[in-house]
Amino acid sequence: MNKQTRLTSVQLTFFIIQTQIGVGVLGLPFNVYSASKADAWISILIAGGIIQIIIALLWLLGKRFPSKSLFEYSKLVLGKFAGTFINSGYLIYGVLVSSLILMYSTAIIKSWALILTPEWVIMLLLITPAVLLGKEKVMEICNVYVIVSGLIFLLIIVSIIVLFTYPVDWRYLFPVGASGGIAMLKGAKEAYFSMLGFELLLILYPHFNHNGGRSIIKAASTANLTVTLVYLFLTVVCLVTFSPAEIKIIPQPVLYYVKSLYLQIIERVDLLFASLWIVNVITSLTSYLFLCTESCRYIFERFKKLKRGFCTVFWGILGYIIALLPSKESEMEMFNKWVISGSYVFVLIIPILLLGMAILFKIKEGEST
Image 1 (cartoon, helix red, strand yellow):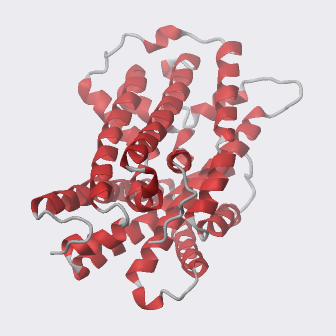
Image 2: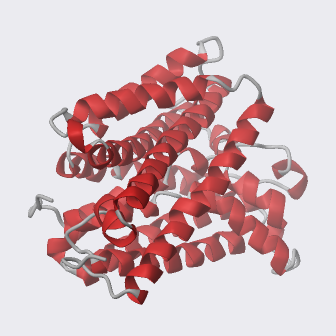
Image 3: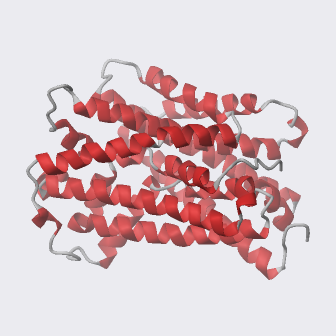
């Protein structure tokens, strides 16, 4: 793989952050609260801790094959046939996650701003910039991610203004631990999907290998810590802003507390907030389309001469079509459960399997079975 020596560990941090923070940021407090009540903020911390352990496992796997991505060393560890099968699974996973992001982001945009706009139009407006950026190489994508990451701080600033201008009650956070350990773990499970994106370290490692293994683990850990703290802060703001009775019936509490904010120069602060959030949705879409594009290059080796743009457009269109299929909320929820269940396989089980076999059979880069 060609190294892009100008890439830095800071760019890796922003790449992971922009992938993790996406459609789930608006509904995360509601989803986690539904499982762990006032201890939702603890569930966020638990989820962040579990993800950090997974990141360490992914890093150990990448460290054994520093100049190769998952799509290369999977064949080295498991053989060409099994490796290609797994690579195809990651391709399908990337398409399905992209479709899920499109579904939920479109539903929120349609309910809050573009009520009369057809869903296919909203999805098209979201997928088009993601495809245009996803076909580029890592360097170009990272440069865009670094620039738009400043919007995350604007989201935090708006939330801080709400915290100091809206009547809040910190007693809603107590008693701490009242929901019990099982409930807090269930809440962490709800937070898990909103924090996905760190698994792209499996294909990003070789692009940043020249920075050294320690720099990579530090960058990935910094990204996870940042995302965890952002989600923790937004969740705490929601918990102290809304009463337990209110938060139970508010699916996007972040938008609701922003809507209550009054600024003389801005009539609908929630729409401004949503506009900034859409950028994060597009970057998440871009990252998973990038995953699809990278996997496509190694699965269909005979067609390596095809331009990256062709693969990105093809899988973007497929994800777009899949996103249009569910017509009911129940169908979206079922699709969501399928994707989350599948993510455990691709984020945890397969990397652990590859790492275990690589250690057991002492397979490292430059060696084969």
